[in-house]
Length: 308
Image 1 (cartoon, rainbow, N blue to C red):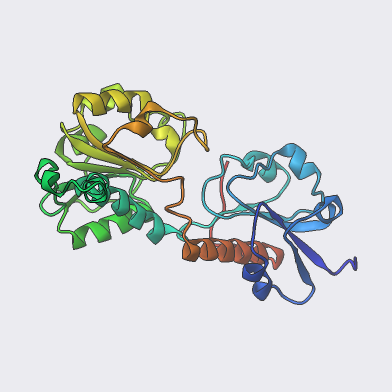
Image 2 (image 1 turned 180 degrees about the horizontal axis):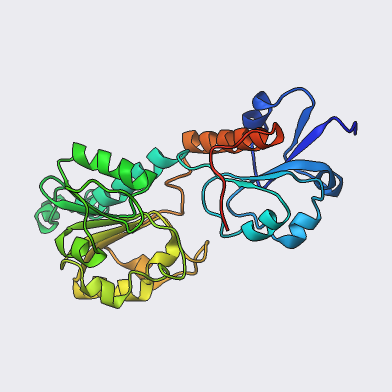
């Protein structure tokens, strides 16, 4: 391999046709690298399920940049990469709209009782339709916990449904008319709650039995953020008592999850962490990761870099 050739490898499945149009002469993309490719790699495009630790970095001694397709870095040792002088590029914004739309996919399915209504029609129980109480979004209050890119996009979509919007985030700038100073205050006023927070020691199992008890009775919770934010055992109890009126889950901890009793509850909607992985958003996030990696190789600053 000529020394002038820059090798860019995929760690996890990355479509060749999304990467190669962005490359310059003298750059090559290897979607399924062997040890020789890893040893020569200047950049690596890292998918969400792929772990990059110190041992993996040892196999890539020429590496100049890691580019994560997404913003989660739980499986990437960012501190070790930084110690070696390797920036970890992330791609915020590439799936913002997709995840926000996913929130409303779950919320509408729960409020409109879509699963129950489908079952009635499917099983010839038309006359039982009056037994299913179908709700509305209009005139109700949506509480957004975490006011980053996705939280702000959720707010924009909520306005189209004539929802009243509240938001809580101790670190983000929030307009005064929707800002709540505490999570407890937001939960007391919200009919629906959507989570958009990173997972940390402080947020792990944030929604536990005590938190559910502080919510409005019958309110609905949607989590398209990180599975570890919600204590599923506590959620089962809250659903059983009616304190929680519905639960929409796109994320789990771990993934894939072992079967949990909450999965069987009729007021629960489930999707396998795909709300942010639409065809369009996946193309966007791969493109942004590649462009970020190329920026580093060219000596330019990428749009966003993870910090330890």
